[in-house]
Structures are given as C-alpha cells and as structure tokens.
Length: 109
Length: 109
DNA sequence: CATGATACCTTGACGGTCTACACAAGTATG
DNA sequence: CATACTTGTGTAGACCGTCAAGGTATCATG
Image (cartoon, rainbow over all chains, first blue to last red; front, side, top):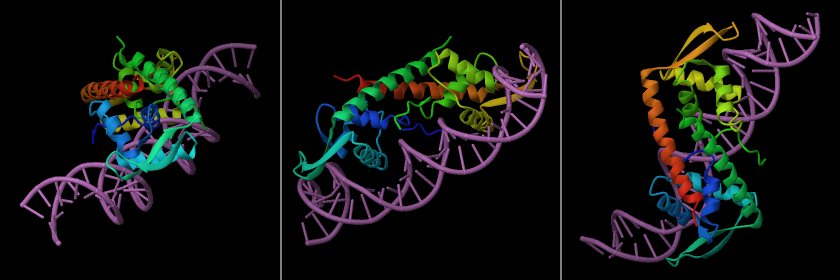
C-alpha cells in the first residue's frame, strides 16, 4: 500500500543522462551509480532501466556501443549525443523549475 | 513531444493535502491555489484533480462536505482527516528524501 | 439570451514504473 | 564438478497517475 516508491516518476531519463555525462557506462553500472550517489535512496529496477535506455536511444539522446567492461565481459556502453546534452540541459532546468515550485507549496507556513 | 509537464508524477496527492491543511477548500479553489502559490508553474488539470480528490477521499485522508462558496454557490469542501494529516507528514518526508537524492545527482561536479 | 466564469464530473488513451520472469557468462565455494 | 552468486542484458504484463477532451449546470454581465 503506502510503499515508498524508489523513483519519482518522470525523472529516470534525467538521472540516466546526467550519470553518463562524464563517462560512458553500461546499464548495470548506471543503476549502481545512481544508487550509490543517492546514498542508496534511489533504486533503479531493471524493468525500468532497460526500457528507459532503449527509449533514450530511440530518441537519439544516447548511443550504444559494445565493449569490454571492467570485469572483462561484454557490455553495452551508452554515451551522450549532442542532442542528448541539450536534452539534459532542458530536463535539468525543468526539474529545477518544478521541484522549486513544489517546495514553495510544501514548505509553506 | 518535449512537452514540459505541468506536474511531477506522483506529487499531486501531496500538493492537495498540503493545500487544504490550513483551511477546507473546494476542488476548483485547490487547483487555483496550487497554481497561484507555485507562481503559475504548476497547472492542475481537472482530469487529474477530481480523480485525485476521489482517490484521497476513498482512502480516508480527506472528507467532503457541501457548503456555500465565496461566490454564493454550492461546492464540495474538502478537509483533512486525522489520517490525512499523518499521510501528509509521510508524503512530505518522502518527497524531501527523494528530491534531495535526485539533487545529489543533478547537481554533481 | 449569449457569453464567460465558476464549479462539478467522466471517459479514453498514453506512458512510465514495477513485479516477475528468462537467459547467459564468469567467479567463487564446497 | 556441482552449486550458487554476481554481473549483465532483456521481455511481458499489470498498475496507476496524468492528460486531452468532452459534458453538465449555475450565476453574472452585457
């Protein structure tokens, strides 16, 4: 019932784009990274992650390339495209706008 | 396509509960209030508002009473129940937790 | 009496997330 | 060498909140 969601709906794209901004990563590592950086607060389920990655790729914001992971195994590395960088800016601005607005209401006398 | 959403999915309940914390309000006024306090950033569509109100009522977090509005017309005034007040605290804490976590990632070197 | 604002509501579709699987390769344990 | 765990990718089905679009009715104004 009152299950505290692992994510805020609609923010996964933003989180993924931001995470691979600095360096290309494979899906598994992206999920781990988000979880780690958020101090274990945000949990990215695989059933959310991979559809999101495919969505982002289809929209031309990220592109994939097979390569060898740190553990010596094949993995799909995703990196930002130019359009993806623009999209990241857009989504970041949008998030800041909306979360600030919500905070106006939540932190109200 | 790249339509900037009016809401962050999953936060509408929180916004409504908080808005009627101080004084009971009818649906129309709640929407106006959220829009106004958020500096016109958050727009609550009626197709989102009324289902949400019914949902909240069904879960026992708010209760409705017909009364006369400021304009002299009949309107359904919603107010928080005790359970609603607890729920508001829970959702507020959850929002703070998640938005803080997202900000950790978004505002990263 | 037509228009716009107020006030309530419903319907249908969309889309993102979750739960739960399936598959495969490598690594460690007994 | 069998077992289990970790890494790593992926899909299927369901859930549920939001959106777009519509409907109804009342009241005030022109």
